[in-house]
Length: 315
Image (cartoon, rainbow, N blue to C red; front, top):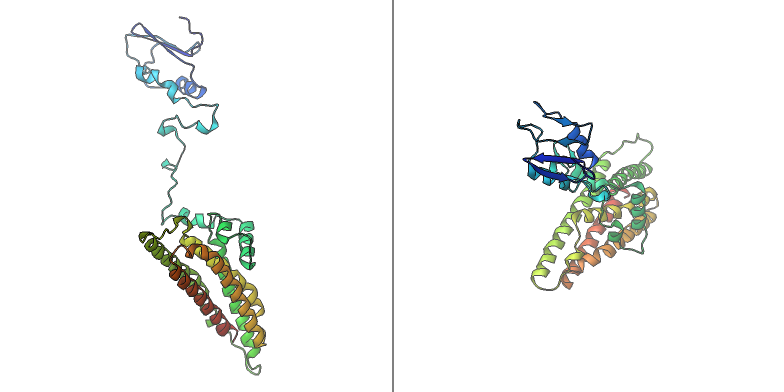
């Protein structure tokens, strides 16, 4: 039987089914399949030609499967669709099931996505937070990828520097005729103040924005949902706003009280300007009165942080 242009020719009940050339991967699997029992007459050294036999062969294929074998063949000319036509069992998998893009709260991958940032990106975001008038909004700099790596280590650095410089300030103000005793309550106080402010104030602001934005939308005031902010972006915004307290804490241990006031005031002004400038496009989607109240609350709470830093560590 002539079989030019075909890789497989099957005779079933005097009917001839011609199959287009099979891809190398499927032809290799068919040639290396070793089912139990009698294979019937197979001549794999020639053109893989199957002949009808009165004895049923475990290698016989249903006509429906034979007719649709070409649908299983991947398109090797298109790299993006090599696996699109394969059956689900042939799709690449991880573990015991197919790859899933879902991340659950109790898995490490859920939290790892918030630390997926490199050093250059963190330094660029820190520099943007320290500059009083950046050219772009900080939310645009985040570019939909807010991280918690920078905010965590910035807050941790502020805690230890506040403890160190606060201890130096107490040592300079103490009487040197007595042995100096370290006050480790400064460390716990700094941790509670910085971590608490950075963790809970952004959550409260995010909840207030969600509430008033939804109220404005229900009232038909035309609130734009595209200007909404996520809780992770709020954490990132407040976390990077703490970067200014690192240089402020390093120079605020001076025994000259007026200098300490000036340094803390500059740190408050820079960080408050950074927060209000980047929060205003989000806050302004609410009613005008609500927007002003929210901005005032943000500034007052931040002023409370600056006052606490001044009198708890550099009094």
